[in-house]
Image 1 (cartoon, rainbow, N blue to C red):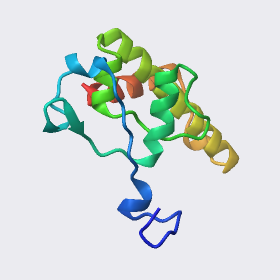
Image 2: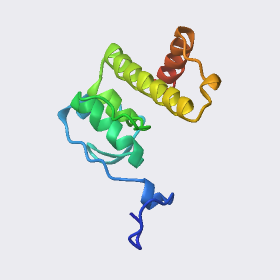
Image 3: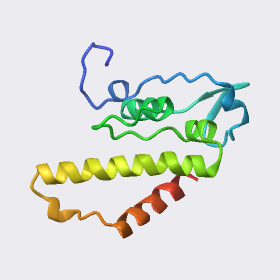
Image 4: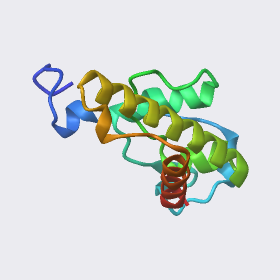
Length: 133
């Protein structure tokens, strides 16, 4: 929401949100990707679109069908400390985004632009995972 009370815009205040996560799991997570404010308190920019995805993954209920968000790096490292756990979470995110893109292109009549296949899934997964490490 903006200072004037409006919704739906693209300004920083309308597209950013506060996400407060308190957990002892953050104590062992590397902090290179976040800005340390004081002691164990970190700040990291989070878009509103990341909120539903992050909560869905953390709660284990899945990612909401229309969500395009990505969990913050520090959250991934803290709540999925083992590489295989992070890989599973990122694979779930990748599969969700692939289904969403396929659905949108089919609805728009452009399904010929994106033909998902096994090779594409592996390539996309590798690129997404590599970017998160």
